[in-house]
Length: 363
Image 1 (spheres, rainbow, N blue to C red):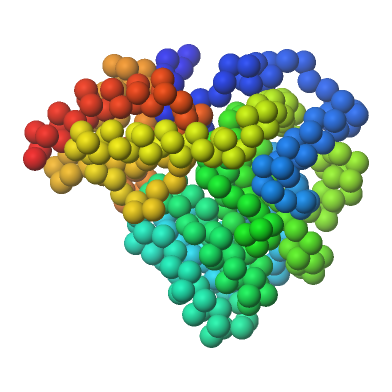
Image 2: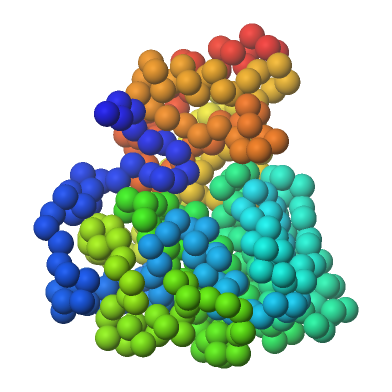
């Protein structure tokens, strides 16, 4: 049995009433009862994303949604621009290369964000690029891109803008249509507040034209197949039905609060956390942070791994480590599902008690 609470940037701690949906009797996936659930989820997501786009659901993690976007939008040899500010920007590159797309790779130092002017330069000098693949919130570093500015540039050159919004969705502001985002990808296990198991891909009519033209081999993730079922309120294959039920309740709660209030709450408590922990002496990685998480840098000589383990064992709270080359150098504190006073104060207390003495000792 799990004896700790998740303060990680996904999966997140799920509210008890939302989690309880997973234990209920579930409908047949071809019954109208389930179609009604899908309809409610779709309608609420459209409001939250500020879009009237098609939305497809896949039984997968967020990476499955990213893969679905590539498989459906492109054909082998298509040229794309990938902007990367961390591990998940790198994932765009890895996926695109698997499917033999021609990748123009634009990496930035971890903790930095994409410079829109550099995107402009590349698109101006390379007319063969069909799309820009980027990230709203980079969970490996806590950085948030200026999606609005990037969207204006991508649309000016009449390219398709594909956005991994998996971590930022609900926590960070995103206005899909107004910001010229053609494809937005999400996952049930992040700030959206449901258990893992579902990814979603929202795409507009401009992107749907790409789907119609794609010649990439595809089946399970095929939007052409899924479109026939979507019109009836279903998915083509048996989905994670109980996760969809949990997602429906979580989204209903967000709708009742109002998405702009939800953004404001995440911004307030993330800012409060960084202000108070900064006063204690902690330092942070990103210069333009997301509301979804805070990323604390360890000074030279201090390893985050034993600190995270100690907090888990002593306090029943699990923070996230750094990823890949950043492992042992960071403590990543999720605010997804913890955008409230009680949990924010708890996170501050345990870090002050367990992490701060190690850091001061090293200094």
